[in-house]
Each structure stands twice: as structure tokens, then as C-alpha cells.
Length: 287
Image (cartoon, rainbow, N blue to C red; front, side, top):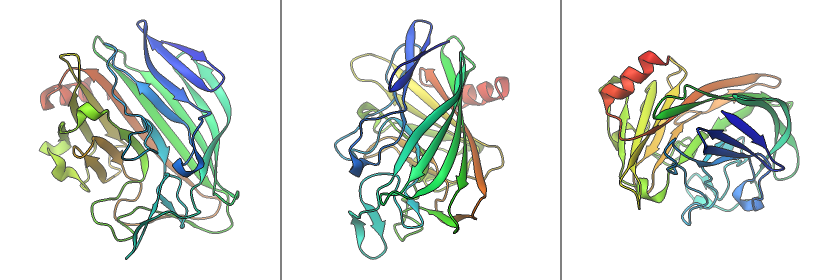
């Protein structure tokens, strides 16, 4: 594994393939919620597994850590869902800013970030850790850890469109948008669960299998939540591919002043269409 530090991004290379770029100083329009993101993300075979700024949701950029509703503020980008009104463009789209890297090593980095609302106030300080691991013959893994600290003098309330009245739209937190060709892919999850019916359900892990255009190949992304966390998943296979272990799918989560919220996730990027048995075997071998 090798990490090249550039002026606005980190580039990670494994086996002569650039498997990801982490853009920490993005050139993003204000309405789209500027924030760091991972894109492009590729398998070891070089196949692209992230979508970037699609026409239907221009603020979707690969893999991002963000939040759709925080005490009335929107760090997601785009319109905000307002109860009994639908999506409304409001002057509430915030920015997540890279402040500094604490460490950069061959297998990852730690970073300091700050979350500012559109009016400029600093609401959240974040410490983020990324570790690249478990490079096998056909897969690699990304461990992602975030520590969110409330720096206001009031509680922060993390919610989602579902907590604001829109059923089945509980997205907020770490979010993956797949490439257009992954639409209609297969969803597999822990406990024998499968299919788009997983929207809003809890599972320790969830996998998405998609097919690529131009090449006769498939890829699998395996998302692993912290065991026992009880996270509910926002997941779609149509009209686009997306996975999000939601911070607050159907009920708000409050963070008191000075308090910290910590979440850990793993994302495994694999060549081929993995079946349930292969996914479960991998998790036993790489706990």
C-alpha cells in the first residue's frame, strides 16, 4: 500500500492500482454541501465502484461522512425535507472543512475537521481515522472511524427526512453512492436477510453486488457496522444504488454540549459477485 499526498487529495495505490482518492479540499458549490469525499474508489481489478455528482443528486460524491438534519441544519447538500411541505431549498446548507492531518502512514491517516453551518458558526469538531487493511487476492478493506464532538452550548439533534415525516428516507451519516450500472443490484445482509426490503431494518452487516458496463465483471461492497450497534440501514437498488448505516433513521439522536458521538465502520471492496457463504466466510477470517 502506498499513499501519495497531493495538494487537495490523498491517492492510495495497491498492486499498481489507484484504489481510492480521498479529496480533503474539494471544489464543491455551496448548495451541494462542501465536504471531503472518497472518489474514485476501485477494486483491485481497477473497476470503479463509486458514483460522482449524478444528475439526480448532484451532492452525492462517492463515499462521504455527513448528516442530513442537525438541529435544523443540513450538511448533506441540496434541499431539506420539511414536514408537510416536502423538500425546500433553505439557507441552511453547511460545510465540513478539513483542518489538518494528525498522521499519515502507509496504511492510513487521522484527520481533524470542523462542521460549520451556512451562517458560519462552528457546531461540530470531528476527528476522523481511516485505515486500509486486509488486502487479499481479490479484495481490500477500509476501516472508518469518526468522533463527533458538540462544541455548541446547546444539544445537537441528529435526524433524517424520516424523523421529519418522510417514510423510508432515513438517510444520514456515512453514505455510499454507486455507479449508474449498479442500479438493480443485489442486496444481502446478516441474519439471512436480502433485498430492498432491508430499508430501515437493523443488521450487523450489509453487502451490495453490482455489475459493470463495458467489462464482463461484477463487484461487491460489504459494509460492516459496529457489532451490536443496532444501526438501521438506508439502502436502495433503484432508482440508484446507495447504502448508508444511518445515524438516525427513524428517531433523533441527541448529543449534549461537549459530548462525543463515536462510530466505526468497515467497507470491503471486492472483485466478483460474492454470495452469502463467501461474505460470511470472509467475516470469520477477517473479524
